[in-house]
Structures are given as C-alpha cells and as structure tokens.
Image (cartoon, rainbow, N blue to C red; front, side, top):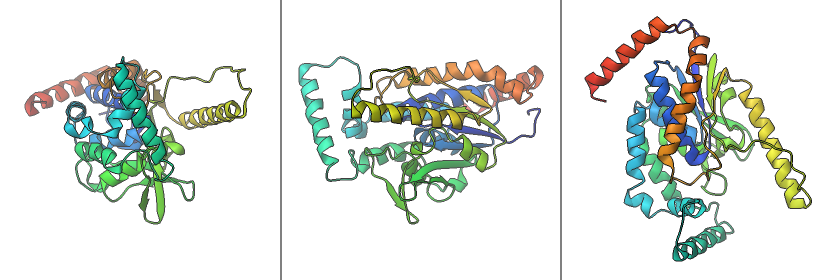
Length: 315
C-alpha cells in the first residue's frame, strides 16, 4: 500500500532500441513495490509497456528479447542489418561493403515505397513479444500513443488489437510503413510526444513517473551553422528539445537512463541498456517513495510479500 490515493501513471518514452532501458526501470519499480495504476507508451515505450501491462514480468520480457535476437527471424531481417551498419562494433572490409550496399538498397526503396523496412520485419518482433489480445484485456490499463499523419494530432489508442496499437505507435517515420486505421494514418507517437506525460494525465493519472530514453545529446552552443542544411538541422534540434522539455515539465518524477548516442536500431548493447534502466530507477526510488508517502515499514512489508510471491511462482 502507499500513503496516497493518487492514481499513478507510468509514461514510457520512445527511442528505438534504447527503449529496452524500460525493462530495467520496470524491474526496479516492481522490486521496490511501487504500484502502477496505468501505463502509457510511445513507440518503444508502447512495446515494452504493452508487454508488461499484458502480465509479463520484466524478466520474462528480457528473456523474450534475448531469444528473439538469436532467432532466425531477426538474423535474416533488414532490422538487424541496419542496426549493425550503424553500430560502432568492428567490421571486416567485406562486412562494411555488404552493409553499405544493403543500406543503399533500402534508401532506394524510399523513393518508391512508404518505408525503408519490410513491414513483416517489424511485425515479427511485436508478435513475438506481445500476446494477441485486446488492449482492454491487459492486466494493467494500457494506452499507446501514435500520430495521425493526416491531421497532425496525437492519438491515444485504448481499444482494439494490442499488437496493432503498438505497431502504429512504433512505426518510425520513413523506416516503418504507417498504419491506416479508422480513417487515420497512424505513425510513431514520438513525432508529437517523445514521452507521453500529457497523455498519461489525459487518461487519468494524477502522479506521473516519466521515463526518458532519448539520446544523451543535450543542446549545446553551436556556431557551425553556415549552410542551409546546417541551419535546418539546428532549427529542428532546438524545436525537438524545447517540446521535450515542455512535456517532461508535466511529470512528477523523470527517470533518465544513460543511453548515450546509440542508434535506434542498434541491438548490440541490449543487456547494457536494461542495466542502465535499473541504475537510473534506483537513483529515483527515494524521491518516488517520498512523493507517494511510502514509509520504510510499508516498503519492507511489500518487499517481503513480493519476495514470497516470486518464490511461490518460481520467477
């Protein structure tokens, strides 16, 4: 139990593979007995949040991710190829040539098709991780945030297929084909909401714990803006940063795992990301407990109950 009646919402942000840090955050929140009343996810946050809301433990989610990353489906996917090409890991000259040619092929696809990646590559990950259920049947109330490319508005998905909702929320612009649903053209929720704090408030959260897994690239002074391309990039960078700051200002607690400058499709450091999520959440636990008025006695009691249930269930 906690010492407040406030409904606690967890807002999980987008960031591609960096979203695996959410697993570590969920593990510590569960370990420390922090009760979550609802979960709202954007992009990668909807994938991990949807899996947890459906009843899977953080350990089960991590095991599924690890298993998928050594599966034939992933090994033969364009998602793996793109991720490795952007990974800083060493490559042979032959591998460099292969990845260069493959990426040129994917870029050419963009001129004739709505996405770089085949839809099935992305769907296979979603279907592997998520059960085929309706969102309303999740153990914890769950909402996925997407962007309607027709109106430019945020869409909070609260009904229908869980897998389809997550696919819409995580359809990275240009990389994954947007999803047509109910007269809307749905794409990645990060376009309008990197971390869905406002959405969490809109669906009833009174206390919001936000998890930000964007790249660790703070806006710094930059005088090197001499060309039109550099000016446009800098303008977009500033706009994105200010919108992100505005959204996060509405959260009660912000957890920021150290994810570095990792490319959204680089799965080579997945286990490190989970640990980074755990470390960041541990640093925020005292603030969360104090804000929710969780005292040491109730915390100790909840830990003992949690430990007993895990031993009973063998998890």
